[in-house]
Each structure stands twice: as structure tokens, then as C-alpha cells.
Length: 409
Image (tube, rainbow, N blue to C red):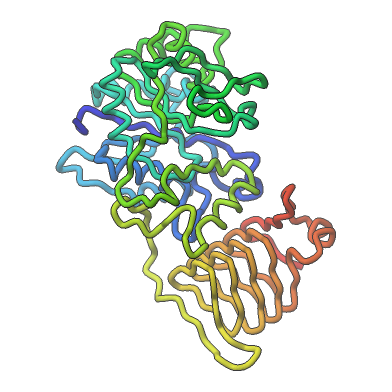
């Protein structure tokens, strides 16, 4: 069955709400959890399910994303497997992608070349585990043209999502975009079904609808805003409740985990979900691993054991190549090649590749992008007014963000 499937990952997002992390890269290329990029989560879910023909549609500042996919996601072409980044090519005119549906429409040559029976369309903006094979089975059983993955969310948050209303047969009876008067589910009145932005289409139906949509001058050419509602209007859309998804190796604590990391605060909170003793999202599930490439770096090292100068990290994730040299790290994530010098104190923070933390520096509740050198005796996250005056980004929840390579004064 896997050979009948072509997977398309929509990865052209700009991610304005994640600035400055997206100042120099596309949102799906933003690092996460020390070793990963956001793109690794949908690609891992697809690969673990055996869907090994994947194209990644890119557009905004895609160089680092293209490089990561090309270097990391290599498949055996002997069996016809591939992961290919596909940039906007202006195949149908002198214009870039004008929406997620237009991105697929302008890439219809991929469908014509591969001739799949089913097309899996996933976003690249979320942190989660999902078994799309089970969703495909439900799609085939339903006989629908499209199946929409939906997750249960509080009724009070309905105005933040595309909300799915379905009948007893799982057919979508109504599709509402960010409604303020949503009603709860029959079996859970305080919840709604919110679209996850993941879809499975019967290929012929998708092509037909994309061609129809491309000719509509009033369309926004959006998958969730135009394509899916068209199928709903014809009673050809089904919903797949993410609660029913079974991922091998999941525990009751992390089953059904899904986080939209579209803002600095949600991105930070998702990192904090990783580091508890019993994490909300368990990176250590070897039956459904999150896959990524790793550089050839030495093991992490912790040195000095003197009073007041002890290299230690607790309740933290520490990647290869990191050195904690007489500093203290707590409730934090250290990416590869981070160096924490003596007497430094890092708490509740995310440090990306090659961040260098000078002696006697104090860091609190911060996200520091790659290649930032923090001078000795600095303070970050201690006085937010001072951080703001220095040009650092401060999130609504008080998380300090320093962009890639930014000089610290």
C-alpha cells in the first residue's frame, strides 16, 4: 500500500510570529530539542509509517531547510524511495506560491510523474507523533475524497482553529474557521474537533479540485480555507479523530501529544515539555523515533568539581559536543557544541548550536540562537527592561530571545 502513496509536506511558511528565529530561515528549519529541526517531525512520522516517497514544498528563505533535507533525509533510490525538497518553480506563470493549495497546484507535475492513488498532505509546523498509516486505513474505509486529521481542543479555544463538525459516520457536516459560537462534541461538551492541518486525499479527487480552485479568482488558494470546504459542501469529507491514533511505544502520558509551536511562547513551552522526569513528549521512544542528522562531534563533557565551580546539568537535555566547564545548567536544553564557562548559571533556557556562555554569566528563561557569544558577567532574562533596551525580543510571557549570531554588548 505504501507504494500507492505520495506524501507532500508543506514547508514554505515564513513564521513571522517566531521572529527572530525565522529571520534567516524558514519556519520548518527552526531547530528544536537540541538535535532536530521542525521538519523532522512530519518526515519522521511518514517514514516510520513506511511512506517513503516524500516531497517537501519550500519557498521562504529555504536554503538551510533544503540543505538539512538533502544532507539528512537520504533514501535508497533502488526501491524508488526519496525525500526531495521542491522549491517554487513558477511552472504556471511568473509568480510564487499564493497559498498552500496553489503550492500543490503549481507542483502537479509531481503527482502526474508518481501517479499515486492517495496523497498525504502534512504541515511542517507542529511537534507530535502520529501514525498516518492508521489514518489512511480509515480514509479508505470511509470512501471519502479527503480525510482531515483533527485533535480535541477546549471549547474556549475554538476561535483559534478551523473547527470540524461531523455526523455519526465521521462525515464532516460543517467546517467553520475560528468560530466564536462553536458547540461542544456530543461525547465531550467542553471540547471541539480542531483541524491539525494534516489531510489524506484520493489523488484523482485532489487533482480535480485543485484545477477547479486555480480557475476561481475569488479563492485564497488555501487547503484549509478553500479545498477542504469544497469537499465538505459536496459531503465528500471525513474526519479522523487524533485520539484514535495508535503510535507504537507511546505511553499514556505522551499519547496524543500535539503542539503548534507557531509563537515564541508555545515554542518555549514545548521545549519545557521535554525535560521533566516523565516528559509530556518523550524523545526516548525507540519504536517510533524522531529521526534527524547528527554531526560528528565528541560526547558532552562536564568538568571541574570544586565548591562553587562544579560543571553540572540537571533536569536538562545536553547534546554531543557540549561542554559545561564549571558552570551550572538547570531545566535547559544545550544543543551541540554549546560551551558554558565557569561560574555561569543557566536556568530554564534553550541554547542552540555553538552558543558560548562566558564566566559569571546568568541566563534565565531565554532562547539563544546559533553562534551567539555571551561575554563574561552578562545577565540575560534577569532585567527585562534592560534586555528590551538592548534590542532583544521579549515574548508576552517574558521569554528573552536573541537572534542568530547577534553580538551582545
